[in-house]
Image (tube, rainbow, N blue to C red):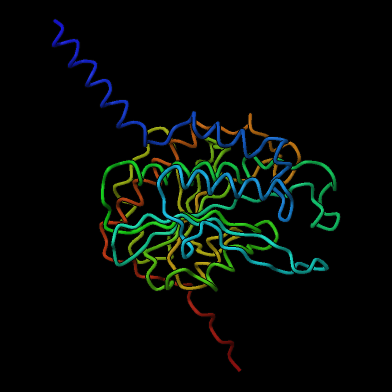
Length: 314
């Protein structure tokens, strides 16, 4: 009896350990609650809350065992201009999982939000905290869950991984633009880039949209075996879009873009943590894992850009 009991306890322990790397609604909730708390004041670019958010991501990358992804550093600092605002500082946060592979998969999400709206020239209520739970604390939660999965699952995958939390997205995709202009490795060595932006407000009537379906020749085949028992999804061919995948797509990299759609709290102070559906987000991430794993069965995706415009007849 004692042997049976011990075997049962060991089996339970192994099961628990195996599940530690699967996407977790509890961890997603914890991440979103921190990033979207009033303490971070909306994670504004060039505001203390944005700097705290980037430090939090770097600390999580380090705890997970990722290597610093920018020549020995987790941060990739940059400056940019935006309208009358000059030399605005920001930084990307980059973690690297080295599998000694020829090609690399980039997984990204932006950590910044509107903050107290000081850089938006009156477009949003200045001085009010815009917590940005869905936009994009939810995406950073997804980024950390996928990083955990590929670090902790015990597999040596046939591709390396770069996990990038982009800064300055809300001010014109600044972090991803900078990265594609100053990559830590050649963009030619990227298998594909997967971007998560606003994946926390799942609507069963709509489903989660997955853009970039037409950005690589192989995507239709990769999607064939994807199973989603509780989460509905639909595909969109466009590689362009209003988030960080756009910077990679226009640079010639195949992309995927996960997005649960717009809502009444978009870019408002009411985009708060309790409104994020962490359970559904965990389900969305399981779809993302299937897509990533299927894509890793291919040697390298073939980029398929948009057709050139037809010249008008003279």
